[in-house]
Length: 494
Ligand code: B12
Ligand code: SF4
Image (cartoon, rainbow, N blue to C red; front, side, top):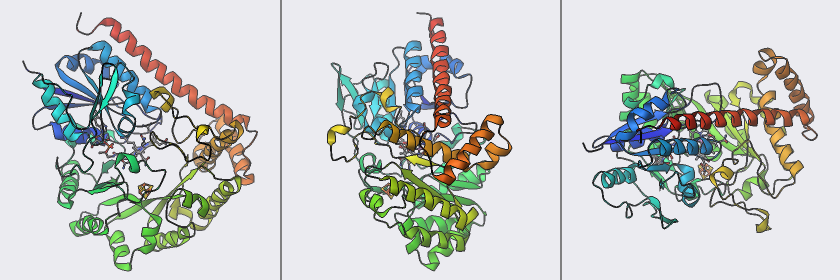
């Protein structure tokens, strides 16, 4: 019988004790495959018996697709790929997602990965499934990278793929209650050109809009069939096209479903909206806007080509307060060229925001600036940065960790300490009232250090980082070991 199944895998990411977000990338791919093929979604974060599922399905699969982004997830994805290869060596393994698209050569260095999909994977995967089913070569498929004589060959994807097919992600393939919230996109990409943003490479600095009709069809389905009342729009820049955003908001307002939603917004956009727009944002059920303030230093913002001024923060927060919208403020520290004084300026501004705007502003975490593939930091001495060359090396690049080779060890440690101190300081209830003795002591240290803005000589936070790292390494080792045991059993008895 002709093979028809495609297995799509989402792997472990961060080890947090909360429900994960839905694997939207895979739901989109599944929807594209569905008319002709039989896509199956295997989310390892919520499927403890994943190995039995693999045993049952792999032999019927045309190929296995794995989605991954930068950071620790890369290692889990790699282990999952090794497992698939051990269990079913003949089934091709395809990687896709933001990281593989930006570094296909690096992903193809791994023998357990056969193919890489670049950019949106919907069209590429359908062509791949057809080619494999018909026994044809995959070498001419747009958006697909593969190895030839051990060397990577890359066919870039057309960058302006329409977002209108498929009409909506295949939500029916997952149980929505397994997930924390429901993610939807109405557009992809952004043309603002911030120098540190993945959009420059991944979306070629372009904005693409999804038809309002399709986006609303999806929301209607989620509301009517699945009882969803809140939507998190994961657009890169939801308001990039204002009339498009308006049309979505009007649909919410006119529906009378009293749904709520949250999304991303630029600081200058919020400052620039007129009363009518703000009224619409309010009336349509907007609860939270995620705003990348990034830094309180104009110099840093300028270097990042953010094209906003730090003082716009205040106006923007006043507007949000007036209209009852919570702002989730995102700050990044450790930008190239950021001085100690500028870092301090940002940290003090955060204190001021918390005091002045109370519940109106949430600042859950800080992130550390992270270079991405093809986006090296702009340094005066270009030799001060060597881009990672393997997936394992890239897995060390995420926003809790300072991989700033151009800084001293002490400077990098200080940045990481800021992240951890703030995490404890800002979650008083969690760590002081409900935490054990160690967490209470750490909260006290965090409180003192944050008040003094003193982040050097911090052995207690070095220990916290080590503990976190150890937990991650143990989880990864366990995943790898259990998988090795299983492949010893040999799936198809050959
Ligand atoms: C929601 C989200 C999250 C969620 C997690 C999502 C989930 N499923 O669990 C949370 C909040 C937990 C999160 C965390 C992080 N995230 Co995040 N996140 C996003 C966000 C906003 C939306 C992702 C999304 O659903 N997009 C819509 C879908 C449809 O698009 P897509 O995922 O790109 O998928 C398409 C293609 O990539 C491709 N594709 C994807 N997978 C596959 C697989 C195959 C086989 C194929 C063929 C194709 C393919 O086809 C898909 C359909 O077109 C994006 C920004 C964005 N707007 O995309 C950042 C983003 C993906 N995150 C990013 C980062 C850095 C992180 C963190 C590492 C940050 C940190 N704290 O350190 C963490 C780490 C999590 C981890 N995995 O370890 C970066 C990734 C950069 C990179 N180079 O990889 C992004 C791009 C944000 C940014 N501005 O930099 N994130
Ligand atoms: S505005 Fe946001 S999404 Fe757009 S380029 Fe800048 S950081 Fe990226």
